[in-house]
Image (cartoon, rainbow, N blue to C red; front, side, top):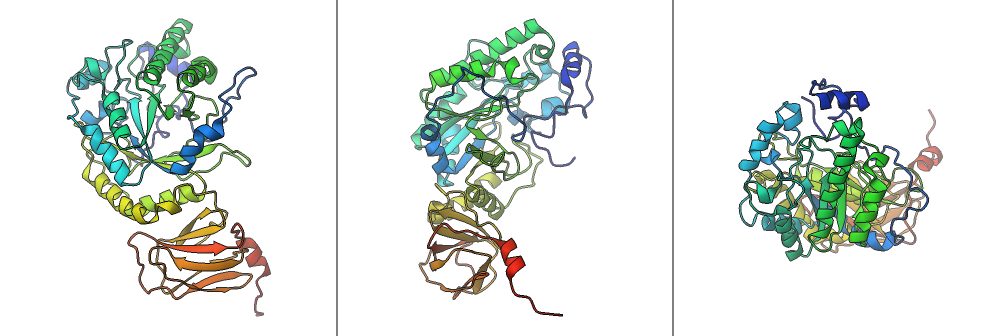
Length: 458
């Protein structure tokens, strides 16, 4: 099977398909509706609905953070064959529910998550409170299909929140609107009475997670199938969220624009020119969100770091996922990857945190971040004792290797900035950072260079 993302699974079946699902008739696997894409047009906010006007204040910490941990943890962690196994393997609901009697994370599981996140240089965490399977990791009186009333016998979200705060990190909650367990989860598309019940249930669960744990920093909705924003009453739901958590930031996956967009499994950017909202790429370390014992397609630390740098280069955040095992332990490769990235972040984190959108982007062996007039050239494929930036239209005042402080000689023309005097080998294992001071915000124009650079005759 090709690489799977949460987007690849649901292809449009519409109201008719939802009715078939509700009636118990099998729907073909290739007739699944895509989960909400960051690029999908969002519903405009109606007159009279106002999100809190202080978005810049609410999201300021997040724009500084740049790096966060995503955690997918639920009954699929016990099944250990991908977080979508319930649907992809056609597991009957009653059979799948038996996993709730086996799901029993060890004490202190969340403290290990939070320690690793902090060690990796992450500034916030986002945990699945309820994934598509419908199992709630939190305490609620609205269903018995929740951790305190199943094998764990305790509120796992509460333990997570306490652990995150102990490490001084920001707390985020993921919540899936789609629900494969609730009897109205599919039939709500065509049955008004089912819709009323299911939307009330959904709003009630969101109220639970927004009111039981103190201050929450991020609400990360997912998959608004099978309803529209109007069907979910998303405006009403967000009003409730902001009434309970005035300083929270909310993403765009309940059909509304939200405070930030959420490109998935690729480094994204603003949805359109002039969009001032934040954006955050979410990505897995292998090809699965939940624990999948057979998935060994792990990214290298260098690949993870390059993705982080490219997110910061575009003024975005990087939400990198771990899929803990059923007892809450983090798979060894995830620990190794994040430990290596964390060592790099100890030295170079200041080039990532608070990085502004950087107009300089083009290089065969480097990526760039920026703060004010300072350009950081992250050389991840070390070419030798000199590097160059083509089409840099801004005057360079000075340059040095960040970790050693070693100055570099600068030779600049209107077509090229060349930096010489570098060591033959990279001083840093994953990427060496060159700090380049410019006399104004750095600007690159490789097309201008291509057109205007003198050429020899033939």
